[in-house]
Length: 144
Image (cartoon, rainbow, N blue to C red):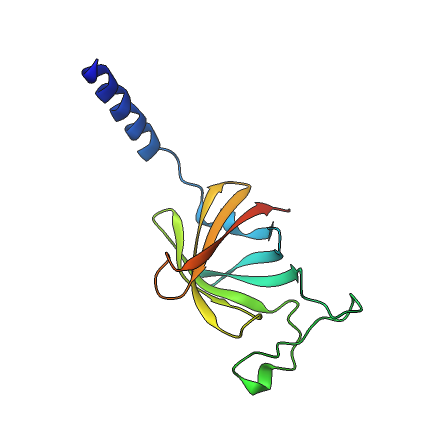
């Protein structure tokens, strides 16, 4: 019985390790989660994303985009947050996207960022300060 369980476990492990990884460019496109909508694009040898929509992107009139008021660079505080490139430098490595930077318009801070495609239509990301354990995850669905 133990040999059967061990053989089954070994088979499952080998199938999982030989599973085909999705191509790096599969991350490009429009993604949405509950609070955000982004467009991921290739920027040289890395990937970046611009902010298309967020639940708190607009002023009370629902039409005017808020400004980047908490940006540490005073010169950028008058820019609209809609359309800013807020994820940069994602590198595809061993089936994951790592070493990215996430600029948060909510607090003006920059966080480390990583992600992994769970399938062609599902993306899991994590923004964090210091270590990934100290962060927040987002699950995205492909829009286009």
